[in-house]
Image (cartoon, rainbow, N blue to C red):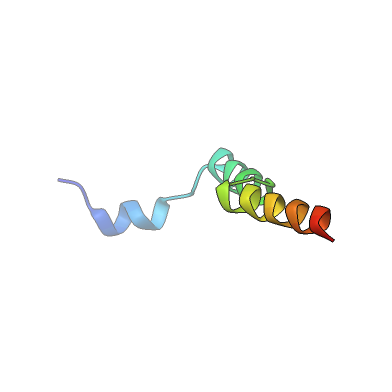
Amino acid sequence: MINFEEEIERFKPSLEIEEVEDAVMNMDLTDMTDILMKMIEETQEREE
């Protein structure tokens, strides 16, 4: 039978997962909101 408490104590997260998490969090991702805000700014600049 598996001793879950013992398994949890021995658990060590994979370094690869931590590296991926850091890479994803540090990425500059553009979403639709960013694109729409940029379009609005450009439209306002042209109107001025």
